[in-house]
Image 1 (tube, rainbow, N blue to C red):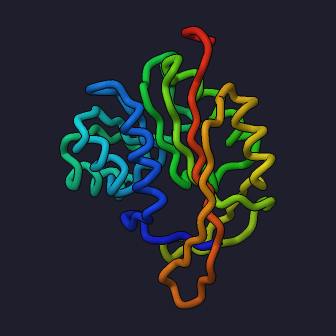
Image 2 (spheres, one colour):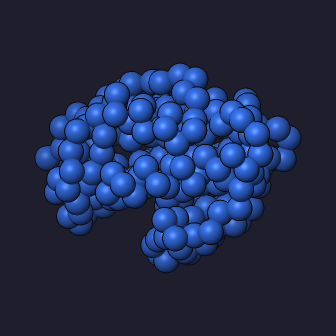
Length: 198
């Protein structure tokens, strides 16, 4: 399990963004979890006329994103601890930003993100579907521990969080690093149903 540079974007990533943008209301309020450099998630959403709040734990990434995507708002914070108002976003993007959290943290965060979505709002998530916990991987030149769910367990986790899965897309990505092999990527398109605050 290796990661591409934070500003590289695969066709599947762009397709997931297009899927979300087609379902957003005009001038939607969106949340980019693990916003990195701002490219291309925040940049694409801003270009489509939407407001974006990007959250990342890295001050370097937040500073870079603020320069690259001045039309968005970026905060250096831990999404696991950041207060999120209920029913406050029309769309949420979670692209490969869960992998350094425990399974319990991922599940708790997805419940909070679902609650932060307005009823009828949409969420797109991308991850590496694998039944692994605390596996050492190289991310942007440093070794980190990664945890993920197998695809069926991920589906169960998202549905338990209160999301309706509308579609899934499996693809294979091969990082540019010479030691990296191909890895599966899963993009999941979801909607929050229900009534406000539930």
